[in-house]
Length: 168
Image (cartoon, helix red, strand yellow):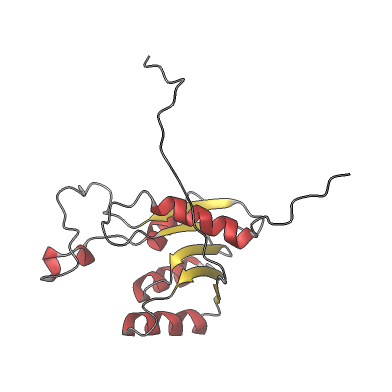
């Protein structure tokens, strides 16, 4: 009898892959962040990525990282975590948030208020910034479990022409 595959993704790796897939929707030319919210039964509740608010054209608003605040993306972009929370049709209380980049202090507030109990993340590249220090402080005080993945999940997505495609 043939044995089952043993090199499968863990649940955390699987849902981090979904967060990365969601990040591919981001129009941000510098940083693409994705998030997935999952319940205790491993069901996806919501996904999100960093982008402009609904109704705000990503062709009109700035994507720059430097300059006066109104000339940069920072005053306008909605982060992946907040988009996932706001886009959910279902309650996210008690859920796990998978996000490719450790949440900022503003997203931490929304995460706490929404009742998310666990955050799984990969990158913590801003860990020494004041906003990330504040974020971690609030999340720990609120009793939210913080888990950094040991392995980075890498997706290879390629769009190819569908040979069976026909226009209607």
